[in-house]
Image 1 (cartoon, rainbow, N blue to C red):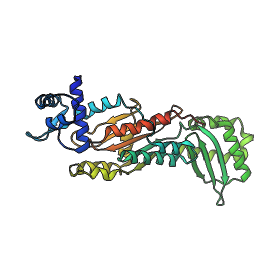
Image 2 (tube, rainbow, N blue to C red; image 1 turned 90 degrees about the vertical axis):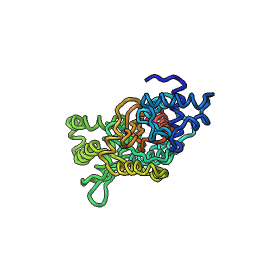
Image 3 (cartoon, helix red, strand yellow; image 1 turned 135 degrees about the vertical axis):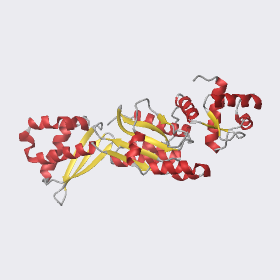
Length: 332
């Protein structure tokens, strides 16, 4: 629905004021904050028109107005069209990702923590499989209890695995060199899909450590079929700051304990860098989400969850920084 520039300004500022202080919107209150030379009567007429269009609603006949789900959606569409990452935001992300010497789980957890602290809302990162990770090296070492430990270096961090297989130090070293030689620069998905064919042509070369390779591939297949979800609840207390938001806060907090529901909410639809789902007027949760990519390959998705009345602008800015910074990184 096309709105005049004045209606756009009035609607967007109305929603921003409501998000900020949770007070119903009135013509008098708007007149104090809008950079427009409008009388209260003119503003009242514009608010009436926006209500008729479905962007605002009155809770009580004589009271001010509040945004509807339709109003929030329009606001978010306008917001995302001009979302720009600003220099200096979320510098800690650079520290977490910079060296990529931490485990992949630590990196995923660190990104969720930083975004949650920056936005003051609960944040979820979901690593949906590892097939897109690009391999750098393998380090396989025998342990004392007839197991071996595997460190798989990728361009996004290390994956740690312990394999229930007996192997000598020499076999582990040979397996490490073999896998690094043949799969460095390839994705884990490529290795999983092509390891059998490679093994068939090189049985004599890998016969001594074939059990290590087979066990490793089995473990990676299992890991690739799992979703790794990390939830950071920093900012959850902020949801309870306004008494009228208690029920909304309860809904958000209950979702954080439901892994199946979280997976569904954080799932991306491929519409762009940042996607927003607005809670309907009956409840549920809103989520602002984005893909985490490296070298153009999606590694995970990140989502900030809250009630319908949440700081979409601040959240979009924080996610924009993460998306743009990670998007500019190159695998090493």
